[in-house]
Length: 172
Image (cartoon, rainbow, N blue to C red):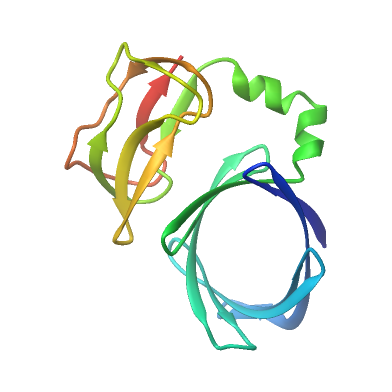
């Protein structure tokens, strides 16, 4: 399978082929990113995947949250990435404009704890501005506004534990 994956505005071509038959314990894949191949052993975890690169033996845990319409929030060690798989397909049916209008619901990408709230109800925010900081997997992650707008509600408070998918803030 081959995908276009857009990360921070840069489109990359990613192809994935099975090397070892998938089972409940995991599988091995050959993953090519822009033509560079890696063999990766994949094992499911509670929050996503544990990946081991066959060449180096390096292991990383990846937490993933599906946001619909091809959008994924991917958390790697020390990095939080928003990616869109096959973005052009969704843009053809109005995805980019639709995402820019209407209410923005900021949700927890995974279970964690609210560390700081950076915008209060009534505040005007710009696209890309930090809204809330949550701690998950011993890392602090700043969630940002996908569009400009006014903060409508913040139904959480600092120190509060949240589950994946919990509404953290609404921007209209």
